[in-house]
Structures are given as structure tokens and as C-alpha cells.
Length: 429
Image 1: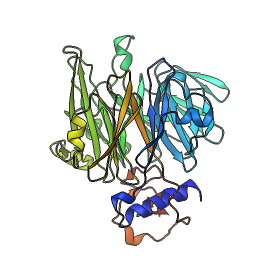
Image 2: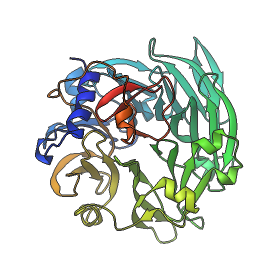
Image 3: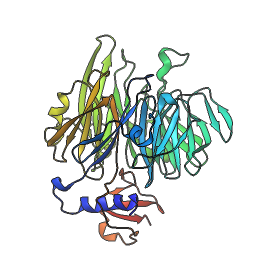
């Protein structure tokens, strides 16, 4: 049975009445290592234990590279990893075998996909495209065809672009301008909206908030975008962004709501909310301050930020355990099972820790991993068996949540696209 079938069956198992103890976990965790030390690693976690902290090297016989910065599921057989300082996008199977590496996107950062192409943001100023080169004054987004693993197009966005998401045929790219402290430009405040088919920038939505940095989380049409400010007088904030409003031509100020919290590390839960750990650093005090919040994006947008943020809703002991960490460095919820994960980077120079909680917030274990553990991806497990056929009649499931193939909850399914609802794959009519 192929991996897609196993993924579908995972949702079937989750949607049935299954005890927590029966849930099975397969988690790929990127450890960034130390920048410029060429010591990035992959941890492979399965069912309550670390299988390997050197998973990629053990399977492929060579190192992953320098500072892996993002990981996404492309389709049932392919995973993409942006290895930032090695200037490669590494492609592997869900079992860890290297398939290809695209080396035409220097300083690659974050990833998105529509299942046929992989889109990657870059701080660089040149890109190898179709056996030639394109040059940019600012940063750009490259488009990789997974049938050839070659870059087929690229488009300039803002300086130092970071988070990128795919929604309704478009890419949404958060621009940082993060090199403003050392280069001759200001911080960026915009989200670029790109037609993914033509790779044309359709608009730049000005959020008024500088330095939109880090990986964004997505819940259907909503994005959770972090801004660390400038680490001096401009405070960190979170931008909740409505992609539909941006596509429908709403004025800039109607496309987002700003929250007076940081969302340095965030993820989406199985109810479509954002879990966020905010890390505020000040050069004035040389100290970090943290906030821990759960965000209902729909309520935030409806209320203009007056409602929809909860600091006490973390299940079980999750919040208490997070506050005990030396340096929280990532948070993730398995979209197939609801299990919760977070990492502690400690001193940033030594091996970090991985925490796991059951969906009700019971701490089930802590594990030693590697240096700067940061980026997660859940894959379905070999134990699952079951459904191979597309279900065309899903009328009885109309109120159940819909997920894409990466397990991200989708609020506005597109006609003709393949989704998962109640463990069944279906084509949206």
C-alpha cells in the first residue's frame, strides 16, 4: 500500500473512537545545528522513542548540510527540505531516502507547494532558471518543477522574504527586510501576493508592521505571521492575515489584524486555531520575554483583535511544561493524531530536547535530540491500512473539518481539488 493510502487510513483511525494509547506517531524533526558549521541533522521519532538523531546520514551516507530551515510534505511520495546555508532544496521520500537536490536557489528559506511545484523564498539576488540566470535587487521566490527538480521561474518580492504559503492558486510571502541593520534599505512591512501560475506579483499588502520574520502557520484562508520588531523600540507583534480579503481586493488595512503578542514559533491545531510561543528579545536589556497564546483567527478578524486570543487554553500541563524550558524553539501539533510537540534549544550550542504531550495535554515523554531542534513534519505510519478509493458522496460529512494532503485544515476548499474529510479522500465538487 502506498503512503497516500496510509495517510488516508490515519485519518480514518483518528475519526473513529480510538483510545489515545493506540495512536501512532512518526515525526521528522529538523535540527538546525550551528550556523556555518555544516552540522544540520534530522531526528526521526516513532511511537515514544527516538529512532535516530542522524537519520538522513544513516540512510544516505552523507550529511544533510548547513542549517536546514524548513520542511514540507509535497505529495504522497515526496518531502522537501530547505537547507539554507548549503544553498540546496533537498528532496527525500517519507522514509528518508534522498531523491534529488536543487542547487539553483542560494540562501533558500521557507517552502510551500501545490503538489506539482515547490515554491521557495530566498534572500539571494540571483537564481538559476531554465539553464540561465535571473537577477534581482531584492529577494525572490523560485518555482521548482518536481518532475525535473529544476527551477522553471522566479519573481522578485521584498528584501529578505521569509514565510510563504499557498492558497487558492496564489502565494503569500512575508517580507522582512531583516538585513536593514547592515544594508542600505529599510525594514519591509508587506505581504506579497503572487499568481502561482504566472509568477506575477498581484499586490503588496502593507501591514504597517516591520520585519515579518519566520515560518508562517496556515489555517485555511488565515495566516499567522510573526514580527519580532527591531529588538529596540519597535515591539514584537503577530499579524493575522486573511488571504480571501487580499484576493478580493479589500483595502490593505482590512486584510489583517495586528495583535500585541509575538508568535515566534507557531503551528495549527486540528480545530484550525494557532498555537504560538512568542519570544521577545531586547538589545536594551539583553533579555527574552515570552508569551504563550492560542489564537482563533476567525474570531480575531471578526472582532478586530478584541476577541480570539486565549492565554489559558493550553490543554493539560502543556503551558506549565513550556514555561519550564530554557529556550523554547518550536511547537507542532500532529494533524493526524492531535499529539503536541515542542522543543527546547537550551543554550543553542548543545543538544536540545523534544517534548511530547497527548492531545489532552498529558506529558508523555522528553527526549534528547540535537543542536537547535526547530522544524517538524508528521507522516502517516506503516501500520495503517484501508482506503484507496476517492469518495464522491460526502454530503453526510458536510459539517466535518476538511484537510489538505499536508494535514492543514482548509476553510474554503477549491473545486476540483483533492482533500480529506473524516478520513476519506474526496474531490471538492
